[in-house]
Image (cartoon, rainbow, N blue to C red; front, side):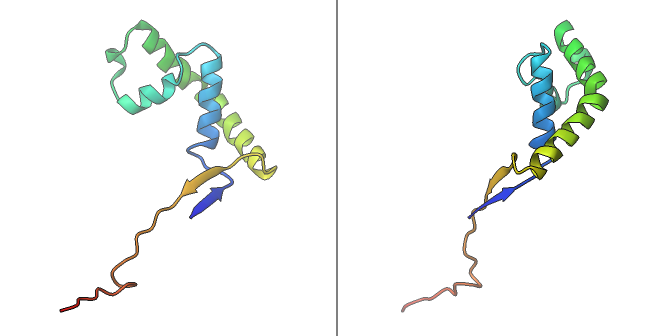
Length: 100
């Protein structure tokens, strides 16, 4: 079955913040890639270091604005995350039958 979640921290505020950083000149989804790699700052080139510093500096303002914006969209019914849940019947619910 499919569920609609009106507010998701992972997709709502984070998505708004990543979009804002994309608009100010960072490489596309740079914050995501930096978080995913978990490398020390010394491992990045000059531009990569600047993107990390910009992302961290913008976090208090963009993070707060993103949470408020995502919550406002959710309250107005203008946001949502679709979650598909796949369930496999357990053996307890459907007993194993053997034919000899």
